[in-house]
Length: 240
Ligand code: ADP
Ligand code: MG
Image 1: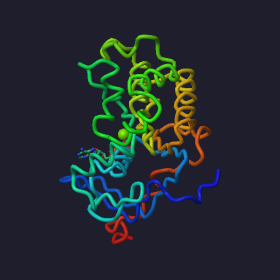
Image 2: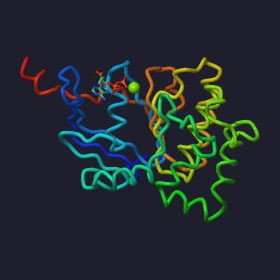
Image 3: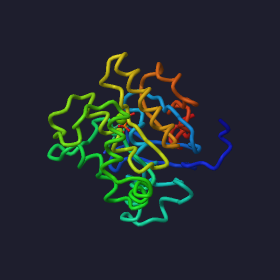
Image 4: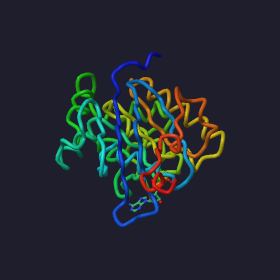
């Protein structure tokens, strides 16, 4: 595939520190995710992978620099508009899956559609939301009747696939996954990656996945190490 296309995510000269924390800082000159591209972001625990994902999603804002998602500078949006924009454009698979414990699987899978009218409309052109949730659950090899189950009744592997269905519903342009395989053994990891990549390809999405595991590299078009993205900090330069 040719990735000279317009980027879906572009980050430029970004600096970020957590308020009150001096130990950790991100300084990234540039990072781009192209439409249709699958990128693995590698880094040790504590290296800032989840922080970078939060920046790219607009959950947190950098002190300096710009982050452009689907052609829109996130800093130009109010917090409310940014939340909606994120829901429209990004499906997120969190490390702990973040399913609602009190809801059914259907409640969880359909949740993004409440905040993302374009994702809802995309489904309604050909089907209805519940039928689409069912189609995704079947594609992800979840058992029959799972949509009416409580999420608290599910195994970890099932919760993970429900989190994938929730991220994919309504075909957001980008899927972001934060260490979704870290709790799995090798065989389950392989099965999961094949299902995830198959569904990402079917919905024409881009995928940015973070992990500390270099063995996952062969599933991706490109591998980026967070330490290679980091430029020298002004403090470090001053010490040289
Ligand atoms: P990774 O995902 O690579 O394990 P993180 O992005 O979670 O790394 O963390 C990077 C650094 O930022 C760590 O030093 C961590 O303690 C710090 N950090 C993460 N989240 C917060 C937060 N909400 N408030 C303050 N510091 C944080
Ligand atoms: Mg993390």
